[in-house]
Image (cartoon, rainbow over all chains, first blue to last red; front, side, top):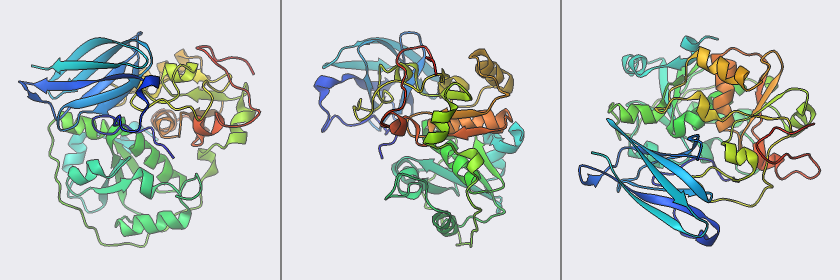
Length: 100
Length: 282
């Protein structure tokens, strides 16, 4: 049974056919270092919450969105940052998010 | 039930970390989060290993739960405080589970692991060992659980509440967006179901919204709280979060969780399915 749970950093791309996915991924840094305590939330075009993943020890995250416009909301201790991004099927949107 | 009887905040938790009759239990999808660190004294439950039958798609048996809780050192008269990742989805699932088997005093830590981490509160990596007990569970309380025939019969008659994201409801996504999109089920929702995502019941830090906000959320979406209600999602843990809101926080009677959820319904032969943002008709 596949769970709905989010794994730390997001699901690996190993064994995933990315041509069928619209991937949004990236790294969150705080003070120039990977933010290893924090969460990224994905909001849709109406700013409605869709998904959330904890950042891994390298500050990394990954979502499997649909094509279109999305907002990544980054929560770290003491800070919140919003980043707009467009996703396309078969492509990987890479983000560098700095929280200072 | 009132909010104070089923929900605790971090201040309460910190004051009861050494209370011998309070057992903190972290529930996650995998064991990694708990094994890295956890609230001091907490025991861990693995959703996939401990709370699934393993052969059939079902909850574990009464005997299985008795064995599990006995090994974890939990007694019938303990206060169990559940918390976990994913905004307490799996903790809420375990809450529903423990109520299904009749545990008297179960509570959720408001905000779960996320708020605890973001607040910078102490987490330890030492394994917790509690002396084994002899836990005795009750028979399943079927008034808390809906099966597929209950759901089909509820179309257009009872409240059906789809708590997945709007894009999953409409059929634009087949799974939450932190997972690869699957094709094992058809997309869409159960006709007449209202779309009320679980996330609307929670604040950004994972805590539950106020009772007034929660009541307005469901009534504003056209849910007649005087009627019987079935909540569902994809596999039944996000809907446990909404079941907790409706039954335990708002005190609405006759609210059931459909743990088969869309993974089951979306694979059934011959049942009606609705696509798009509107509930559809019976």
